[in-house]
Length: 327
Ligand SMILES: *[C@@H]1O[C@H](CO)[C@@H](O)[C@H](O)[C@H]1NC(C)=O
Ligand SMILES: *[C@@H]1O[C@H](CO)[C@@H](O)[C@H](O)[C@H]1NC(C)=O
Ligand SMILES: *[C@@H]1O[C@H](CO)[C@@H](O)[C@H](O)[C@H]1NC(C)=O
Ligand SMILES: *[C@@H]1O[C@H](CO)[C@@H](O)[C@H](O)[C@H]1NC(C)=O
Image: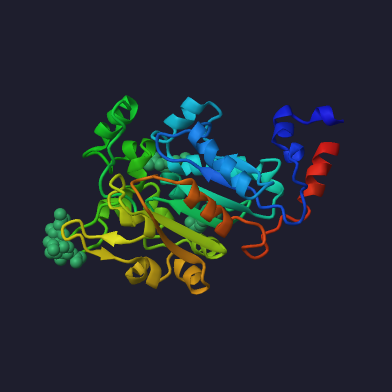
């Protein structure tokens, strides 16, 4: 009854791989791309191919909000992140392979990094075992980044953002506004407008009075969370956001995560994760998203190789995949 299975599912099964699916098969890898990129882009697939080359047998899934690459790209600027993350949660939970895996590894580029964190905190099914983020805005952005010179769609929307960040319309529609974080430089405290109106970041960072304990529990369950900062990042302002640090824009003084309330009072489980040795602060050379194969291979070997992280084997998946085929 093989014909009952949609073709798209068959195409996803890694049966043609020359590597046998054994107990040391690496966990699947989910990759969430950044602003202005799309799930089908060549550059992104080069990264996925390198992950497979490094850890043969890896099943790679590129997170998308739409099967059409242009629409998926548009969704990096436009949309309500609550709905986008809920959609990704539903997609992964119903995916024929990912939903049968005991866990997955996750790689987030730029804004995709904090969105993966949102996925983990809110849904985490399938659960993420190791999370690696590159140049992500975990503590938000204090300024909007410049769009590419010919990126008119981005330009027109960023224009609308300025001065309107905290309106309901902007918070419901413009993606970067939902991780914009404004603070009072004198006190270092987040602005009341941010706490009240932020549709994404203030919530997933548990900055409001009412904290969601599930968020902290889910993040603390990770084996490893590695956060990469690009040394010369001028796109993300401030770049230290990639380490959850707080930057005083007037003085340039940086308050490290471990000195902040979000950590000391453990609002989202980062302290618990750190205390079990699961939080890695990493730097890499270059500007925003200047990724070399060398750094990527290092990441794949350190965080995503089977047997490296504890329990990182995908026991029984072969049987389940087999069952799917034989349905
Ligand atoms: C906390 O988050 C979980 C997961 O998204 C959700 O099911 C739950 O309703 C939230 N709890 C509160 C008090 O908001
Ligand atoms: C975003 O979507 C959620 C779920 O549909 C909704 O509850 C929320 O009000 C929306 N956000 C804004 C700012 O409208
Ligand atoms: C920042 O906080 C200080 C001290 O509470 C206050 O005097 C000042 O008006 C605030 N600045 C802004 C721009 O709200
Ligand atoms: C930020 O820097 C300014 C200028 O040096 C200083 O006046 C202010 O007190 C600093 N804010 C905090 C919270 O330390």
